[in-house]
Amino acid sequence: MKVFVIGIDGQLGTDINDYFILKGIEIHGFIGLKEIDVCDLDGTSRLIKDSAPDLVINTAAFHNVDLCEDRVEEAFKVNVAGTKKVASICRELDLPLMHFSTDFVFDGKKMMPYTEDDCPHPLSIYAMSKLGGEQVIQYMMEKYYIIRLSGLYGYSGCTGKGNINFVETMLRLAGEKKQIKVVDDQVLTPTSTKDAAVKIYDLIQAEKYGLYHMTNIGSCSWYKFACEIFRLSDLEVDLRPITSKELGTKAIRPAYSVLDNTNLREAGIADMRDWKEALAEYIKNR
Image (tube, rainbow, N blue to C red):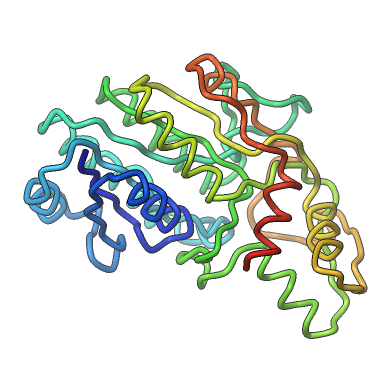
C-alpha cells in the first residue's frame, strides 16, 4: 500500500509516517504549505498523480485558533477551499481521502461526551472553517475518513504553532520559574499523536469510510492537564487555575469538548488507552 501524506512533518504527520513505515506502508510525504500548497489545484494534482498512491492523508490546516479570528479569509482559503481542491483531486482519481477535524466544532453545552451523531455548533472562525472542510468532503466524496481529534500533543510539536504543543509549553514555562496560569473551565481529552497513528492505521485496514472521533479516553480541564504534566515530571511550580474570561483569548473555545469514539468501536476498533497513561509514556520518553 502506498500513502500520500500532506503535512508529514507536523506532530501528527510525523507519527503517522513512523508507524506506517513500521507496518510496511510506502509513504510519499510533503510538508504542507511549504512544499505543497493545497490551494494550488494544478500543483497538488500533479504531485498526487506522480506518486500514484492508494490513499491521500491530509493533515495540513490553518489551526492557530486565535489568529483565525483576524485572518478569516486565509482560514477559509486553507481549511475549506484547500480541502475542496484536495477532495476534487481524490474524486477525479478515485482515491479515498483521510482528513482531520477538531473537537471545537461543538459548542460545549451538552456537557457529556459528544458522539458523531451530535449536531455541531462552532463558536469560532477556526471551528467554522474546519466544519466547512468536513462538509465539503461529505458533499463531494463517498470514500473518505473524517477524523475529529482533541488536545493533540506529539514529539515533533505542531508546525503551525512554532513546533510546540501544550506539554512542551508547560515544561518550558516551568523552567522559567514563572507563575503559570491555566484555564480550569475548558474540559477536553488530551490525545497522543502516537496513539492516534495506531488507530488511524487500524481504521485504514478496516476500510470503513465515514466520520470518526478519535481520542484517548477520559477527560480533564487544561489546568488538570497541566497538573498531571508537572506531577509526572516531578516539578513543583506555581500553577494557578483561572477562567476563560480571565485568560481573555480572542476566539471562544467550548467549555466542554470531550469526544466519544462511538463509530470507531462500531467499526471493531478498540478504545485508545487512558490519557494519563499516554501522557506518562510521553513524559518518560521525550
